[in-house]
Image (cartoon, rainbow, N blue to C red):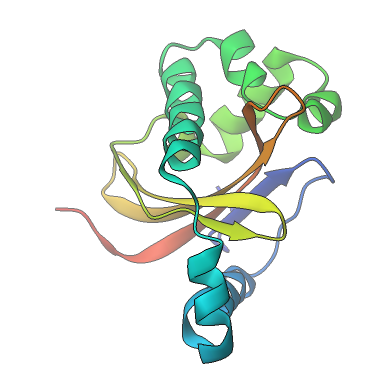
Amino acid sequence: MRANGERQWESGGWIGGLKRGAWLVVLALVVVLVVVPGLAATAQAAEVSPADARAARAVIEGQLAAFAADDAKRAFGYATPALRQQFGTPENFIEMVRTSYPVVYRPASVAFLKPQWFERELVQGVHMSDGHGVLWLALYRLQRQKDRSWRISACQLVQAEGRVT
């Protein structure tokens, strides 16, 4: 596990940065979608529909269940084609998650936040805790596919302050 507390996989390649940089991304989302008064009405008008929220959650829950069952092929199927192309095989993908994202691979707890639109992607925040009680925020980016299904295009993981006791 990296000491900086931030990890991300996405179709464009690995991104690693400072913990502070990840919080800036989260802060920017909050500012754009909530704080800026002129955009508040726009954000409400472009709210994620209940059907899209349920579908996105089902995709993430499905992938988490596949990780729990060590089902690499099924977990890999929830990724976008570009992400699958990047990793090549289900085995490469699940090994990366197992070694670099242990809280996503085996979360002790999971709590879904309200999804938001950001740059034509659905962003689903998920609070997770690991086996040591450490809290994490996983920001999943999902893209709608041509067949109208949702697939995960990226996941950014940031260690949160505090612990679960």
